[in-house]
Length: 355
Image (cartoon, rainbow, N blue to C red; front, side, top):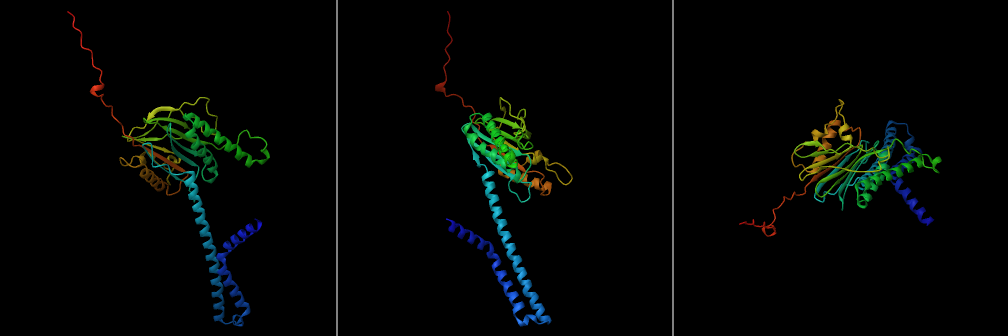
């Protein structure tokens, strides 16, 4: 086993050094020619030019080899980031129980493909359940909380019959993550859990359930409300907001807001606050409601692409915060009420005649 590991380690070193083999060989030949060849010691101008050309070639070769190695490392890093995004923020299914879905995310961290925003949609026996959230901050530092919340949602959405039970599970998952992070950052306190683990980190989120009749059940934990696109663009009411997860404990009784519906043909746009807080060079905010007023019948995927394009144009490509969009269109067919068949109608009794 030890010998096998040594061979693998040796091969890995050889692969890392391979790009420098040819330039190093040139260097050895150049040094040997300079100090071992009598012609190289001549002081004439042709010999000086020849020596300079040889050493310049060696230097360029070393630079090219180093650049190729960095390009390969960058390509591998991008491939890993793309795979991470596919697992962490995987695209939702195109259709779920008669709903058409699309989602997309823009990271404010330069060179990053994932950040502090999260979204997911799953079909369950209780309805199509969705979550969109925003971890305080952005970039790689927020990924731990994103993983904790999304992992818990993907399990709890199927297991919990009530939407309030799903929200409880998300809160517990985030608390565990914050405690573990606090222990890692303060190993001297490993024997006891800190009173306020990572007190400045919290998650705002919107937890939503679309039932078979289009009725919505919503929990809003300090998150921007969604927009409903029908005859006009309007902010959907979601009830009184709860505190963000990680700030204060949830109330003992959790009752979702059920006063809204998503009718057939209507579209629901869930978003994070980065979409409405994006500014241009003059400090003007991005008008998300205006951007959502697109062509009638626009597909969710096309809407996401268009809004992202307008966002980047508005900010000049320099986002101040991560932006996530989750778009849902109700394509279920509304079945009109049918009159009862004649054979099933109850005949009325004939009026009695009195003499």
